[in-house]
Length: 194
Image 1 (cartoon, rainbow, N blue to C red):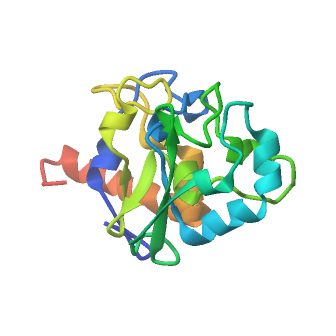
Image 2: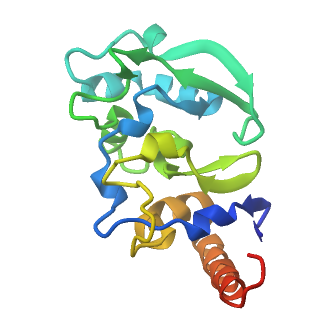
C-alpha cells in the first residue's frame, strides 16, 4: 500500500486503541530517552534559543551546547538526509519540562507560525521508517493513555491519531489512507490475505 511516495505498514491500519485513548493526553513517555530531529530543525531551535530558554523550567539546561549530541547520522527519512539526537538529563529529553511537556512546543506558541517542535515529535506515535508510515515502537506506547494499542479496542488509528496522520500525510494523504484502510478491511473480511 502506498500514499504518495510512502509505503504504509498494514499493522498501523489494524491497530486498535482503548476508548478514551487520545494523543492530547501525552505524558512525554515517548521522548524521555531523547529524540531524533533533522539537522535543519536543530538549527531552527538554536536560532530561537532565547525563546526556548524562556519556556524552560529552572532546572533545565540553558547552555545550548548541552541540548544536542554532536553525532550526526545519515537517514533518508529526514528532509536533509541527516539527523541529530537531543541530549538526555535526569532520564528525560532536555526539552521536557517537569510536567512532561515539550518546551519547544511551548516556545513556539510565543510566536504565531513558528514551529520549533521537531517533525517526528509532532507526528508521534505515527512515524516514518525506511520510507514506510507506521506506528512507532510499541515499547514507548505501552500503557500510555495517549497512544497505547489495545487488542480489540473500539478506536482506530484515525480516531486516536488523526492530527498526527494529517501532519505526516496532509489532508489528501489521510483521505487516500482511509480509502486504503477500507479496501484492506474488505479484503480481510472476504478471507483474502490483507
